[in-house]
Length: 83
Image: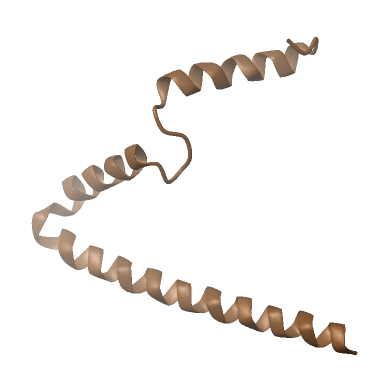
């Protein structure tokens, strides 16, 4: 124990959480399974494939934007170093 009650309480909460939730992180397989189940129940089997396709298209677009932004920032940083 740290001797600081607020920190000790936080550590205890994290230990309980680790026992209850089998996978940590927002992108764990358990969380994705829950999201998939809810999406199936809300959208139904007819609309789910189309929504998954749209989601994939949006994600590809975001990756492209991220890649372009990263390349642009890298060029800016490199050009500042050359001055």
